Image (cartoon, rainbow, N blue to C red):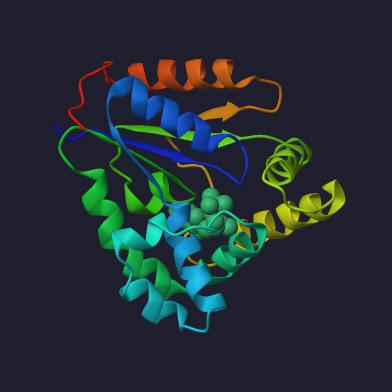
Length: 209
Ligand code: DC
């Protein structure tokens, strides 16, 4: 049985944590699609042409260390504006979405472009200040040397680039359920996500992934 859950939203809104918790709850497989763009961004930083890198991408590239750094995040948002890169990553994402046993994909354009037929769609957001604070704390906990203002500026720059690009800009699908996590803790956000997905017909433990 295929059942696709599309979870979109800006950076550091809580999508990743919610997606992993939702996948575990329903027994579905999970794909963080940002990692695809990060892997291509990383290859661009190493000198490979981004479209060539996207066409040659293999699942093992997603396991590479260092994909979650701030520099790779910025490179990812740069390669994500290139239509040929987005096109090269489309089939991989669609095949994952329709796998047997159910799938959760999180990203920016899952409900709008990759899986417009997804059975459940969520748009997870939070204010830029709250997201920058969370990302800053994550980076510092991971040993990075940075300051809040730099992270807030990066967050706004990436939001702007993601929302204004011509191809697949970040925006909620018309039938997405909106979840604003600015004032929610993670348990409340996960509970809201699960309730919204159950209302679209998924039942816990139905996946085989
Ligand atoms: O979610 P993230 O921070 O790992 O995403 C990194 C970049 O990749 C982000 O700035 C925009 C891009 N991206 C995208 O364009 N489409 C997706 N489905 C996922 C990520």
